[in-house]
Image (cartoon, rainbow, N blue to C red; front, side):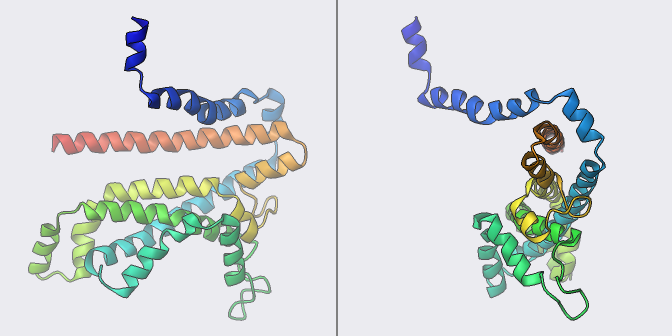
Length: 267
């Protein structure tokens, strides 16, 4: 019977189960299992920690919002102007931020915007400001929103768009009246994915936005700073806070997806 059981076990099961728990689950549990009362007391009593939480949430929100807005622009080109040079350039460049090392992304932003711009932004331009943090987060998270919305746009019945165009709608009006409402779920998913990716960004943020406590420091750089200072218990507590925040976002995305699936089945 044991031999019969072994014949039914796939090699993929033998590889996946132990490796998944060892390489994915165990490191997460290692963080959560090392949270201490002392670490929580010191971290949650540190005003710099709460500044980093605020900076992270605010900049990630606006980075995701900007990402979705730009992704909707890409979706417009995807549907109405897929053969244009602009679309082909955007389609190619959309994946570049994912492939680039994020230190390179941060340096690119620093060279592009970290200087006296137009004579009124100052000697360092946008560098080492919360706007710089937001732009760094946007740069690395935008492709997620763009691909999510483009994938959803691909599934839209073109007949609905053609009907709107026949009735006299311009491409812009048809996109606003017909396409965007149909992209609602993709817009939400793209926003959450971009927001989640923004929360985790470190290299591009620290290169362009800096790591100034209380000013441009975010949760990822707060953890790094506490490790450098030898305050490992505080770094662990802040990391556990990030994990719980990420779990909340995953649950929201999963619950939203299930509700959407149920509503689609009942329609």
